[in-house]
Image (cartoon, rainbow, N blue to C red; front, top):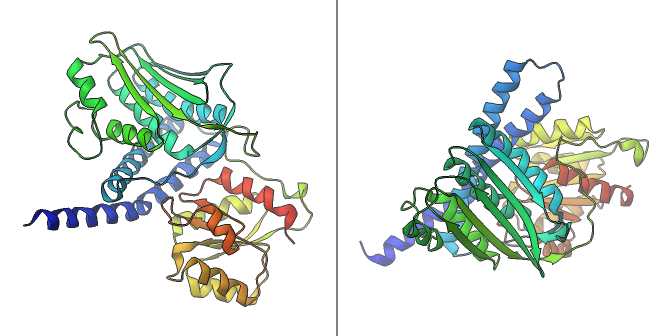
Length: 379
């Protein structure tokens, strides 16, 4: 088989893997969401709580693996990953990292901690999901290769650069292993030489995509230090959840007395059921349309305050979708659900007439933050 034919087929496989990743990520994210809901029950016994922790840890591991495969496939098929930056709380980022990593460390009787220096910005413009993916990859690798002691994540700032440092008291690395890590990329050439595999090669490629630097220092028997430096723009405080401890419940009485009506156009049953439940619990009236024809019928027959539309529900272009919805008579806010590799940016979607967009898998904190911003403008 000719080389060009082999490369064409590999690129096709990678593109399919990239597109199909949400078929795994959405249900896995729904499982994690339901675990949080179950934990709200104060009457759970110790055994159930421990079982939930095992399920959560396993699901997080699977989700991380799927995310890394998707990222690898995207790098291989296009040699780039789209980065979408938002204003985020860096302190909240560390809180969320700690919530995920601490149970993993605890299983091995390791101490895991996070810290942020006083000189570091509290808010920044970052692709938060990609930064979390990169950091959790590094932390999981450190935990895997540390038998006793600690793993620590520190966030500092040097000039306009954010500096993330992961330090462990693990086995340490030989000089050849360090070179392999620093030369690693998702081309597959160095993914198995160190035994750390896919996660480190993906992390390094993500850092490079963010125009950052990746440095490894280690000695056998003395642990390792991985330093990641990422340029960022300091941003103003953002209107988002103040902590990631639990799924928030929004009080609609703070906005208006009548219930807000929402049409959720989402083809994934797992995702639509979970989001619908949380929105109803937050005081909204929700109608779910799992296909395009049903969504049009609802729009024609009922009135809604907000419409949330999965752009992949129909073969129409984004411009044709919003034209069709407006043509039926709906003129209020329309929120787009997008894949994180959608070709059109949030700014481009706004130009078409969408109020904003949110990425799959949908995070309820992000969605409720969007609602709080839009509701005073609706109705």
